[in-house]
Amino acid sequence: MGLALPVAPSYQASKEEYLSTKLSYVLDLLREKTVNWSRKNSLWPMPFATACCGIELMATGASRYDIARFGAEVMRFTPRQCDLLICAGRVAIKMMPVLQRIYMQMSEPKWVISMGGGVFDTYAVVQGIDQYLPVDVYVPGCPPRPETLIEGVMAIQRLVEKEGVKSSKERGRGMGLVVQPTIQVQVEAPAVN
Amino acid sequence: MNPTANAAVDGLASAFPDIDFAPRPLMPREDKPREQLCVSVPAGRLLDVMRFLRTDERCRFEQLCDLTCIDYLNFPKARDRYGVIYSLLSISKGHRLWVKCLVNDPSPEVPSVVSIWKGANWLEREVWDMFGVRFAGHPDLRRILTWEAFEAHPLRKDYPLRGRGEREDFERITRESA
Image (cartoon, rainbow over all chains, first blue to last red; front, side):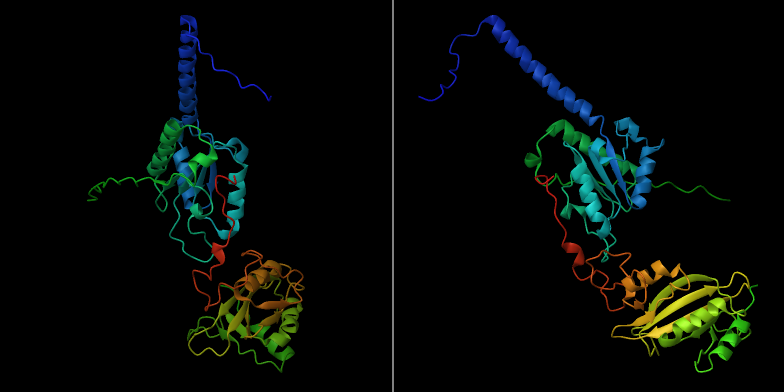
């Protein structure tokens, strides 16, 4: 005879046991929510800035737009410490293996924002990094305004809050969310004379 | 106002009587016919001429400001395909000269001037990469802007802007592989 399978207890749970189970359930729930809540509010971006989108990314990090309001101000230049890859700008083909290596070096859980790009349709430029990397959120514009990038970061935050930390397989080839560009407010120019 | 390179061009013509330099201004103007002179040199004599321009007392072109190339495909009234352009500056004399060397398909080739101006190294690599003009005697003629496996020369006029499908064959990374 082989190993005996563990037999499920078939007794009526006492009041103490029931309470402890309920308590652990609540604690689990709390832990999950808390972890996701804290994770969403402390995204560490990896700034992969290759073009003018990088300037907008810097503006987003600066005091006027202040990405620190969303807890994502800690830009680290080593992928080992980051969980959000912001690919700001078009990627030249020679740069693509570098970007891929950076993505591979980031530890799970990780998310990717593809920001801007798209008008440079020449032999030297990759047409969309989502052909080669799983992208979660697209931030359109050339370059996108800081508000649009913040909207993209908030989309990532909603993902983190809702989905939590799913394994890579469960998330597949990226979420493919597209952030709407911010509507520019028309300001009337003051009269000169 | 920079001094013109008249003395240098005259010295060049007297030192190489067999070459027709055809000195002409880059931008022809009636009132200044000898300003910003450009001379053309055949590829076979380029190294001799360049060494003369670098060392002769009347020339003294110590600096190679730029080295670039033009593809004259479908250019009106053009007889040759490629023009390799050398932009020279004499710091001691204060004059400038442009040297043009015309080469043709197949296998366009000019002698390398790295032995005269070391700064020509990367510039010649760029011209080789972008136009496919070989530089004979270059110490390290590899591609400089595009990657190793790239085969075409993209600044040639007959190369399509969107390439010939080189950018589509890269490794794809999915979440499973990461």
